[in-house]
Length: 213
Image (cartoon, rainbow, N blue to C red; front, side):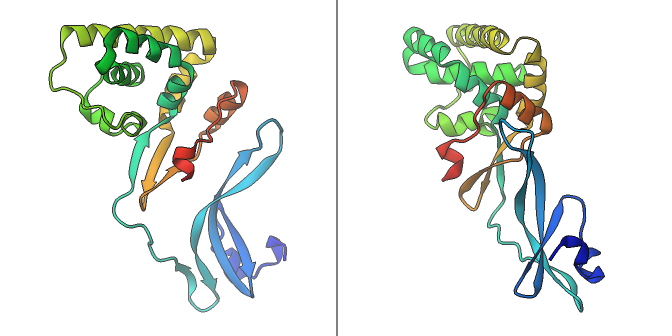
């Protein structure tokens, strides 16, 4: 049945960013967003989850909250882009700093994203999942600080060589992409329009086994 033919008592619950589905004579409301199909100009609707059932007598009956515990959000947007394009820098740090290379690399990435690095930022980053054995020290040695600054400088140079004039947009918009931990499973957040456009332009692939488990 076309949406326009749904009863008024159903359509009064329809809002921007939602859609209605009729199944077995019952009406259900879902959240959704539009997403461009990569490589085309076509737009598809992507469901963001079930909101509730609509009845004529009771109106919108919201779904029960099935989330256990508090959802956790990690920054992943810019860190993922850096990790995908700076493997050679990580390899170089491993040769120079050996057992501290992962920690130095993680802090160099944090410094690129936030212009600083500390344990709180690390704990709320995808880097904390990727480098699960890394523990940031309470005090950094001068050698470690030098390595972090070196890594940060090389990362910025590498990103600039790849993204050129688009780098300010990359740095501004990509950190808003989050990896959500809900009910012990990972979910990638929706991508802002600017992130989608730049991802298409530079062939950034957001599919990864980690958040599809």
